[in-house]
Image 1 (tube, rainbow, N blue to C red):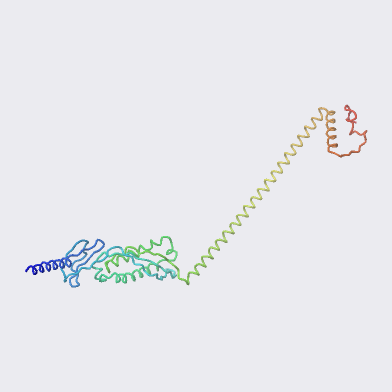
Image 2 (cartoon, rainbow, N blue to C red):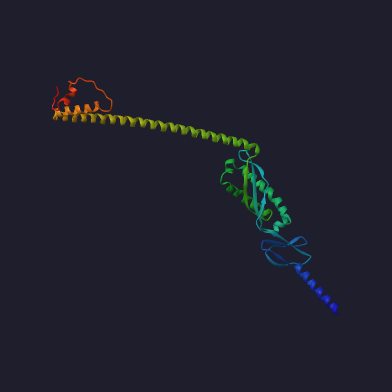
Length: 293
């Protein structure tokens, strides 16, 4: 009797544990869930927390509602001027309607990616087809993705129950067969600009040099004219002073001139001067009081 009673207790506890484990379930904070009965949805958008379900007949599917990233493959698009570009992009998306998401994808994330990717490709193809190459490679190219993001977000909410939060372009390249021609054209353009700048520099250099030479010639001419003027004024003033001094004492002036001539004539060693002793040159050597003849 005791053994049977113990077995009943153990069996009852096991049944309660099984019932609890199959009746209670937890939805995490980063998840949303739907409750199914034989594959049909009977409760939508179950919020995080502890919930109850009927074992066997009811099942629960949970979905990750965090922001997910879809890294698309690089694709080739044509611009408005029919130039090809290779675009590498990624998409950020999030489940916002668990019921619609389950109905469209059966809760399979890979299936959702397979449905989202062609839509993104089509949206980008249409957007790049409306833009020229200059607009695409401009610094504000991220702003160009606003339109496709909003358009695709509205579409995916209805079709898949997901929100397209952002479409970003990681890289834009030219096809290999076009890159070399573009680079050659860019190089030629830069070389042309460099040649123009060098020519402008040489022209400016010549202009500055010619202007400097002209100013130099003008300044030298003005300096020579000024120097000649000053020299003439100095000579005139010297002549005036000389004449005035000579007129005050002619005898002393002659004596002074003779001394200066003696000094210059006998200056240095080994000089020889042959003159007639009776010449006027030696008049002040013979007599300090001599007068001009």
